[in-house]
Image 1 (cartoon, rainbow, N blue to C red):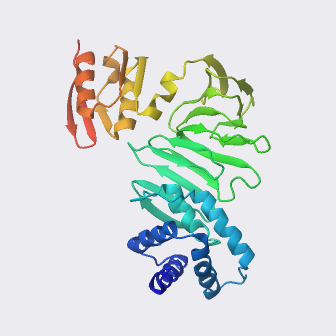
Image 2: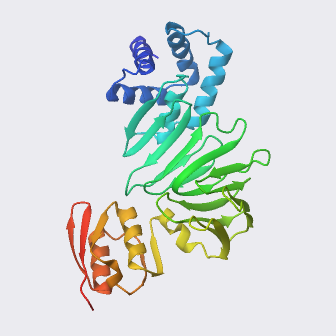
Length: 335
């Protein structure tokens, strides 16, 4: 590492700690962390730490352990050519600074990444976006549009617990010693190693958990505190209005289609169709009275642009429409 790079790294770390780092400096910081080995980063980390007004001394052993954890969380491997950093790499690269009560906010590729005051990592997915992440234990998670996933910075040390609002597909790394728990507003999902989809948007009356493989236990967190064991191709549906859960058989095609960016509809009302189309394409709909449209819709959208989707729906439902940016106005006529 050259003297100039060393000085820049130390300067950027100091600015970051003081919440005075610019967006461009932050990009440079994460790029340098990505490009250098632990051995190269260790002296900079130690030097920076000792130059701050800290009450605690960072020992060499602690720094080495900290750098090892950073590399594990960032999952960085040498890749020829241009490297594209995931949000987890960005968040982990700066999380090691042990900011105490410091809160930091960044916007990267339309994703809001937040290190909260109580050391909780949070990912917010924008409208019309999808995000794939890997948790520190190796669990792969795909998050759908307008979803929020959060977990403690020490995830995996004592337990493996995340909170979800929205929709996520989890491929859980097996660990029989530490169960993986997904907390939602009204139900918890507990597993050791499995694949499943959770649908838990706060503005919807229904929550769902569809199991692809493995086994899970779903528990409601409100009276009557039901608990249901689920096997593959079964789905649990929780009704917020009644507080009751039920288990049904499913093929998982509909529940997991969004993961491969497909929209699959099976005899669905126009309200449900518009909600799901809006979520995928990042648009909203204005319609005077959807009750005028009685027909249900069955079909699949894969790689179609929004204009093609609307043309197909227009033919099926018989409405006219006008696209104004991210808002689509529907004009229903009696058929």
